[in-house]
Image (cartoon, rainbow, N blue to C red):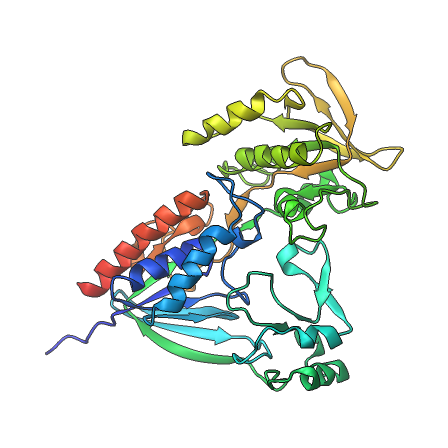
Length: 414
């Protein structure tokens, strides 16, 4: 009996930097590749960074090159607003079920923005981590790929939705769009669903919910970004004034058996980068970094040394016990200095919590995972890539994705 033919298609789940890299590497070897992304555009959390290591450049630099590669490669098909809900079978003969949510905007959208001009309601801005709102007809962000608007489902069946549809000169609004699903036969699956920030709301002693001027590290990236809610100005959320005295609290929920018991690798360097953001904007600023110990891996030790030489950046070896509201409304960081045994209660304009990374999605089939929910190994034929395999920085994620692509290519060509 002849064996069933194996599919030569590679399925990549997740359209962040890891998924994009894996998809492109596999497609450029000659494989047919399908890339699935649950959001409205590619780029993942890297697209929301202000700058990233090692060159401290804007993420547009690396992402735009990859977007051009995607446009030029007919072997790579991209589906946004889509999720993989089921995977059955095994290596060489997987069957994946993909569900696509309505965008209410068809591919002939020219991104002219006429729909947003007539939209009257607003929804939370997911790209800016809810720090602001956007019109109910919106472009995911300035460098979105695909460059195509999205209509919030809240207005799809309303008079406002009809006004938005009437404003579109190219007829790109489809208010009747429904969820769809399709099945796909693939030979290999790369799981590159990335990460999500550990919820700061779980850190009750730090009063993230109660104090407007206590934010997270990912929110800090958006405050510093030129296309962020404050147009790149690092301002207090409570009153919009410049934040010139800033506390950065390391391991906020990480290396803690009550929260994330592991180190997320990138948090120390991310906070050093945030200190640099503040110092660049305000030469007279004071930045205090509260740390258990500092971890700056590989060649990035030089970045730590540079910041350590800045006399207006203080390093306090301490895990703050709590944050209290001050009499003037500013957050007050309270705790004990591990080295000096001094008990402190220090007020700040802004406090940034360095929350860690946790996996964002579990594969919908039996897959080998570690104790923390990260994909490991190739058991079952699902190959992990990027931060879906554990905490990594951008360059490490790309390396991991390249390795995953090689594994997938080998799997479908056996």
